[in-house]
Length: 215
Image (cartoon, rainbow, N blue to C red; front, side, top):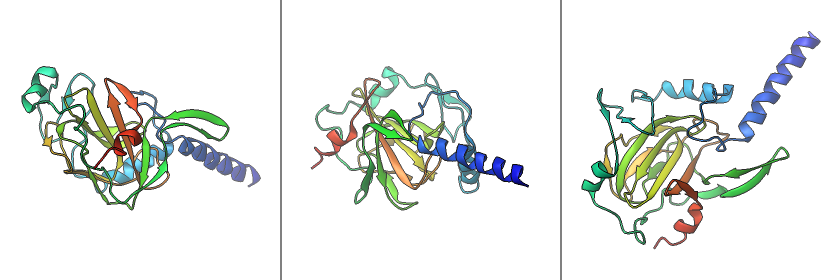
């Protein structure tokens, strides 16, 4: 009986440590999901209506089509280019609060870089795209749960992670302020929030710098 209790306690401790490092895992990581993420993905399937497709950096597959859709500079150019100074014109989650900032933070004695900012809000709260662009990813990402990536065709991309529901599909053209997903806690997550990233030329930036310039 004592051995079983010890093993059970060890299992809970292991799960807690993995939860503490939510949002640190790279989108391209091929490591196996921890038990928390597996549980989140299993529970998410119960209410998620889109079919899951493999997400590749080279070829992106729409959840509503059987044929793959390849996005490159040529295919995106038909949508026009956003001004580098005015491409972000809407807040992804109005009336939310920042629960975790961009940059290094220490958890359980380990310091790591947080690649975005976390905006806390109740589950189901609408998430809006910050600028016009084309949806290049919409599906499951390891560590990120359900997420949307928008290419703004000016060197910038934005990512919206841990969603409970995805509305925008790969290939959709979206305008600033358009409803693209709902807040949730999928992937490696300890509570409902939006993990928001700004990527410039494939390098993650501090989103707070850009959000502070919104009108």
